[in-house]
Length: 393
Image (cartoon, rainbow, N blue to C red; front, side, top):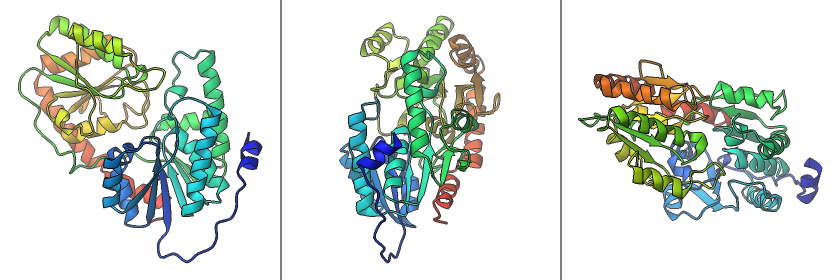
């Protein structure tokens, strides 16, 4: 595979030039994520280097926000899901072309396809410093429903990771579980350095603490509507909880997804008709919804370090989540919230019920969450670590 790709696009050494500042390319699979999840990092990078961001969708609002902080933006073709080899070769070629034009000193791709095709294109383009930021290994590497098709996708993905990460400066993960997966599945050479940062961090000023609303607890889940985010478990837990506490409200915020495990429109409509959840649609700004909630719930089967959990903690909200990799790490059981087993709606319902039966926990655990966010997840600390890995101290 490596020989085929290398023969299709021949690497050439970039022309030498005198620069006043280094150049960095950041590659994402979703244009809006550049602002929603990487804005503070891009702003910190732009203070040290010339920065180019690559992502697939046309998004004028994101592009305008990036321009304000001096970050250039270019669209690239990329299908976030699926394994169409023709589409993926087009993606690889497009990234290679942009790298040859910009001639960066370093690349920082995040999420699966940008890591695979961004690192491979950077290697072919002669970019020396390639730092892969794995924000989570995703549904392909979750050990549920491992049928023949999913096993085949996992094998192909693992092979692509190995080729793309050959010679990378560093692979950076958010949690120990993902680090073990990279080693156990041989997604990278043993000699490639494996680093860790505590998630993407959180801007404590952008997500200021606020008092929870008065009255019966309002539970909120924010996630893409996918099975592996635990959406169905949340709905079943809400159904169980409402049998004994009919006054509680369980809200769900987030978009449907092209992922194969996405919730169907019919299923979502049925939940709303039943009245078990309030579906709030999708938004670019979760802050008003966090302020209007009492307790944040994320029953996901795997995360990197959940950004939505960090946002809720910064806002001063107690957390109910699972013991899955990337979910439990930010939460101190019995102090900032509760951690339950994955795929266990009954345990999830019992944990949620504690906030109904002991309302003071909403306030006390919420305050503890904010303190923990300040102590461990300040975005300035996380970004300083990433800049160091890119040689931009």
